[in-house]
Length: 241
Image 1 (tube, rainbow, N blue to C red):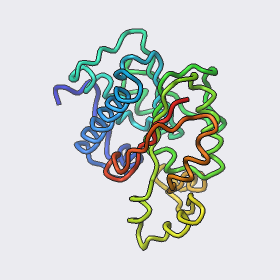
Image 2 (cartoon, rainbow, N blue to C red; image 1 turned 180 degrees about the vertical axis):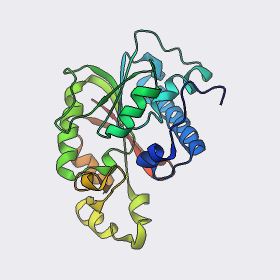
Image 3 (tube, rainbow, N blue to C red; image 1 turned 180 degrees about the horizontal axis):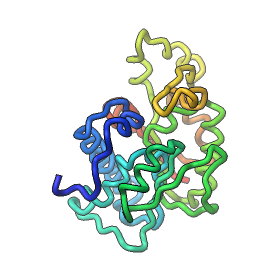
Image 4 (cartoon, helix red, strand yellow; image 1 turned 30 degrees about the horizontal axis):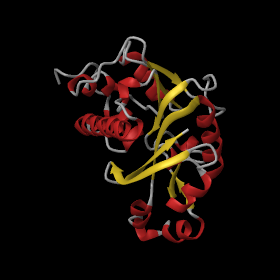
């Protein structure tokens, strides 16, 4: 705990992000994801996370991953410069408020409108969205892909996670499987983690790889799929703008 730069959120905040309110799991999973993002950046974008001038954590929640720029980052030799701009956005007002109050000057945090990013075209060098596309309807997924393409500069890095083959084959009673195998996408499971009033927008969704290759590549080049790497459940989709 002497390595922590900010408080650990309460159980209620963590549950809104991961469904399980363990502070230890929050720290371990956030550190693991941060380290994975750094390794992906090294392999596919020729450098560590501190090379990017502007980083956007899309779906930041209570800073589970983003805080690691100041905690795990220095431990592995990352040297965040004063000029590096790290932004956290989320549609969850409760966790954004927690982050604003508790993260101090460790990044900036703003409530995200459903109408898109309040960012300039090409402003972002590196965008990651951990368990965001796993919650969006097909219509909203296309909208946000267009927004990501707008704010990420050409050549920029985008890393998103999806529920891929492993996730939909292990789904309870495998009810998602026939839909994903037939159409490549399934979004009929409401998720009430951030409130019952949001469950028509906030879903549990599943993707097949061929669907991603067909529908996510208008503005992006898919560089790789890394299966079951995020939380032993979700796949990383590594893309270049």
